[in-house]
Length: 215
Ligand SMILES: [Zn+2]
Image (cartoon, rainbow, N blue to C red; front, top):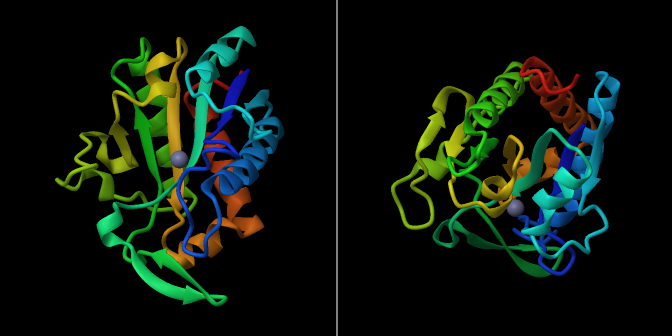
């Protein structure tokens, strides 16, 4: 059983896309597709926080364990540091974008009790995403304030982010996926394309199968 954590909530909705949509909306849509893909590949999963009312990230790993999950996957969409965001006008309003950044990122915490199993699955998910035609982003490794994350597996887009609450508090292996950069105007549209979501979902499920947590 896999816990699919829908990143953020209605009240605290995460990043803002280049066209002003909240990250939570993207996370909720993709989480459903990931859930379907896991079932299609013979696994079982449930969602945490899909109703948008789960405001406390501390409770999410506990929920996963209570419901006997053996793996915790947190679904997010990415943005960039504020200094890279530029104004543009869309539908009569000023929005902010950064088109030079794109790609997926994966995070694991060395404070998670099962860091080796977490990293094994993060690498498998990254590898499957690459095989499906997606590209990892290196922007979290840039040596600037707010980034400077050490690589855990650079080839597969996996970083260490030790203090991410949902990762470090989980008693089970835990991985956070940033599926794409929604501050990028083209990538924002791709992330909303149902066929792209299906490819991401299938790749994530394949990665989870390859690291042995779908059975
Ligand atoms: Zn997020």
